Image (cartoon, rainbow, N blue to C red; front, top):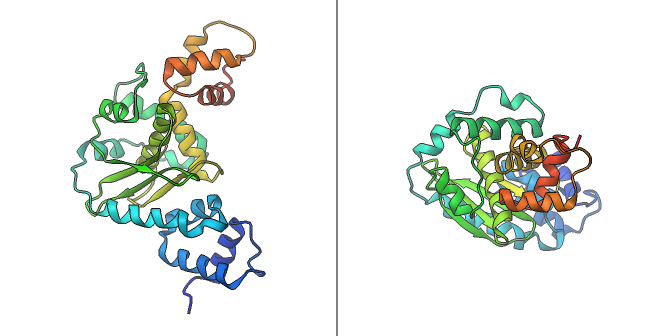
Length: 255
């Protein structure tokens, strides 16, 4: 007999776009089985982003990665020191504000206010003095996954692609491991907008392309920031033009 509460079953079936009261028994059994195996901290984001026709194909890599991460053995004094630097009360703000504040605080703590990270994701980790494992990720609905070893070491898996996209994915996962309570697995989805996803996107954008530095680059210009401007700034900061546009819009840099 299922140990999943009916309300939880209905919620997650609905996240897949299904009517929980009109399901094929096979689909219902798969949902029930996944909820029984999956850590509670990843269920919302998984079911929000999963393809109902590929539930097993998209879930099994998560289970495999969690097992792999549990066996990692690396000391993490720098990561623990960074986590300890997160100010109390930051979680009380709106999700995107949490992300912005964490990015600004982390840059200040590391004395990196003027630093641009134009290299690869590995270069970024090196600049932060973080010797943490990064594995490839394959399923298309997730940009990054983070888990922890039995010793509390954060372990990351990020989706392949352009260097600037990998850096954003890594930053999203890194920021979430720092701000969340405890050491629990998490997913960064390609789309969808749970609190975690909003916060992680805001953190990555602000950490890689700080709005204060963008404002300096834009100087005293007036009028709208063009696509050409965003592309130029993206090359300068080592991110996509979409990240720059996100920062321009959300920090009102064109006003």
